[in-house]
View 1 (tube, rainbow, N blue to C red):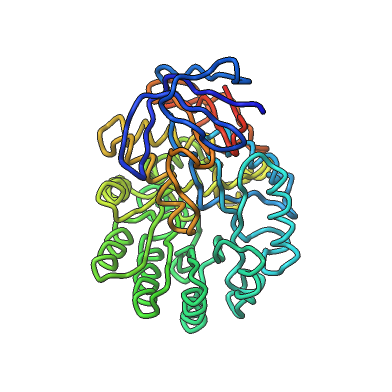
View 2 (cartoon, rainbow, N blue to C red; view 1 turned 90 degrees about the vertical axis):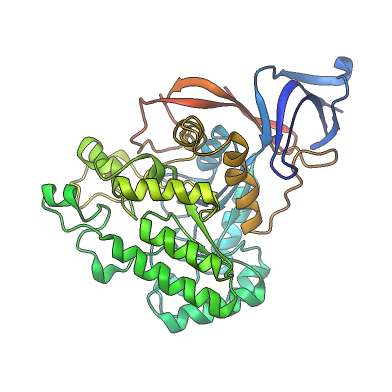
Length: 423
């Protein structure tokens, strides 16, 4: 039987809060020893990891793999390759495929194709049929068939009575509902923050209130129903504060931040054009700093990419016509190191916790940390290596970070005991 040895890695385990330098042996997809001297004769391969850090594989609770229906942007195979290149061993696909993942056939298709990749590809089902916000899906049946949770991400759910019923049912099923929080009644042109930049461009834009008002509503619904509610890609200071208050009141609300929201501001639209257009939009410096503060104090539980591939032709359209979103799987960790760890906002251990342990907890996924007997879903990285973003494994390349120098590079990703990515 082939064994993989990892020699001399610094091991970070957020589950136990421990750090040590040791050798690790992997056999049959699991960690079989930690700290024992490697028997080179039995190892099919040894990874020399001196100067590298070993951590549990990252978990992204928010990706769009565009499969079925929009595979010219991305497909499950290429999305999984991008995830592996970013150090992710588990991803949760959103339901806004074509057709929408609101039925057993589409959900099963995604899960089956996911099993053909080298990583764990899970999927949420839609909260409402067709993501039209008018009628709930058969949540019980979709959960039975393997839906990790429920979301209409890409569209807000405006019907409060309907959403409350979804919360009640999700609480009964003990799964999270993840919410895209933008009130379209307050938005003139989405994808750009309403402020100085939108005024300069003559675009109506999306005000902070569009997010804040819905987050406040849904925090209260979560508190009333006891549901596990996840606020997706939080972008405003007011929404961060609303989640903070809700948590203090004892809710089961969680929040995620996308790397672009703690890295860039609305000014990026002037430099990158449609590559900086996203929903919710990039906000002000005050909002960016509030997101970082939310990550620091635990108000924001996790980092999730909102990996949103689009073709080059689509992103070449005028600003008000081009689709919103950027890809993020391959730059997320490096942006976390560059923007959060290097400036001292988070420790490396805290970053890993927000990219692995906390996302796994949201969906009730096993998280044994790094221990003998645990599945060998691991990432090896150099936190100090500087590198230039030159290409992507994703089918799309819609990223403002192309050509940028970042710190922190994934060197190997191991999933199920197999090396699925290496530099």
